Image 1 (cartoon, rainbow, N blue to C red):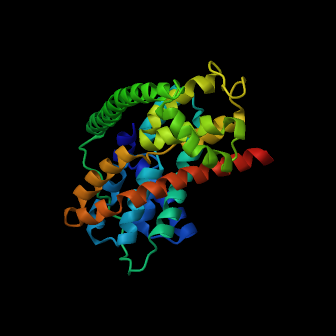
Image 2: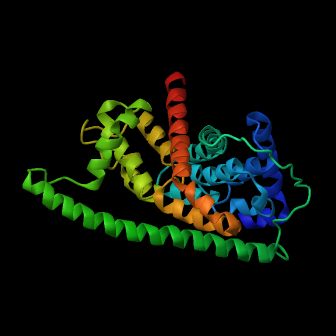
Image 3: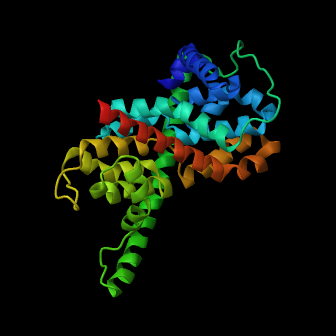
Length: 312
């Protein structure tokens, strides 16, 4: 569907409107603003295709902003998958649109613009490659399938790895009387202060921190799958003996809504680096910084959602 809209010019129109608003609001360049807007609909390696002809001449700060935009957001094609797990669509949509300015904000904080930005003209559409709507639909279905298979393959690999690691941790923990020791437990304790600072009640902070950690270390799909039973009320919070509070559900749903994880950093480096072959090493050197910017953008969106709930 997104590919069909792109062929018909619908997506380009929306991207130009949103991108233009971001450019005026944040003072960012046209190319990075358009890429950030496109990330609301497309994935980390698909959105930059809209500005691919201009990427070789982009400044270091602009290129970094393109990476951050992809890691801070999720592809529109994945929204339905997350919604089917029980995450409310309105939370996903709000988080997606908040990620566009959020990614740009932290990109400019971490690598400010110090070079002369080259002005570009988007009046000529360079992204339309399909012959007709049917070709666009076929291409979109193929790209969507590849994205789903890629995430699915990563998920299967990480689930197996986590299961093996939890078995080892459980065995080691048993020597010290902590049979329930697991990766999720460790991540929960590590990220619980962050969850609490975002507005999660302390009694639920360890659980919320665990989901945030799973999203960063593994991926957001794995974290959403584990969050789903708490959203439906089928599983209660062990620390309280009660269902997860609505506030925590909202904050965690926002915090997980982004591709900012180690696996996607590798995908971003490979995809974006392939579009600017001569600057591949430069793209790779900014990978971890882009991950941090994407994480901070997601956490900021979740914090703002928590603040809004307080005054709603």
